[in-house]
Image (cartoon, rainbow, N blue to C red; front, side, top):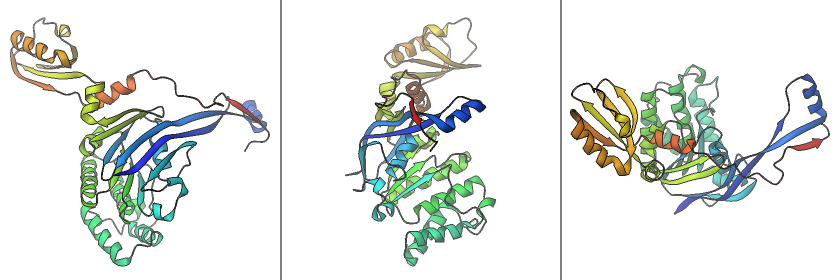
Length: 344
């Protein structure tokens, strides 16, 4: 059963622009120039109940804009969307009580108060019954190991501690749908692992539907079976991790450990040499040639160990973004518009 349905969603921003310099600034007061930027362009997909979907793309691809429309923070320029049967930008109370959006670069906590005070405010806003609030808070505090930080002023918390508190306050009302925008940004590797484990456990226990954006591929590979890749506002791919690798990176990585140093052997004739570190070598070869190249390596070289691997997902995504893209479709008034009158 689909909990998130998006059809032909678009969002265009009208961005003011001018040349540098004093006189250009003066002219812009009376005559401003604008450019239409289509951040999200004809995006369509569905997410079923309980799915964790990775929503990937480079900076400026349209990920956060899409999530803001789904959470009701932005109105689309065109298209339709339904989340839990609601139109998000109508911001109905019944809808807002069932979703949560966590942005790793934004804080929901009051900087000068202990985190527990922000939790109490959140409880009041969502009208959470006292017994439910205590039960949920105790569970989250235990899972996130927050016992020592609840009474500390938020400004005194480390980034990892603050991110755990942000996750806690986002989940106090037990949302059925979570939009997670860079939830592990800036925290150390140990904390990233703990946050991933918590998200996985929350999904399993409560069946929450989750859309996750992240630049850390470890987040994606640990949590998501399905990926949606977006760039320049367009969906490039929607499918499994394995299908992404199969479709967009049809090659294998062969790693060999040698018994002795090579003496003039030309590895480049077999494939792309990724690395040579003492007696350890990594080659990238077309998937169809992997068996033949492996056989030749075993015949020609003094090999102690050999492994054949799929490429790292980071390489797969890099290849997607490295491909030339068609120019995004421009709206009818895409050329720089000139608006007379005073600046607005």
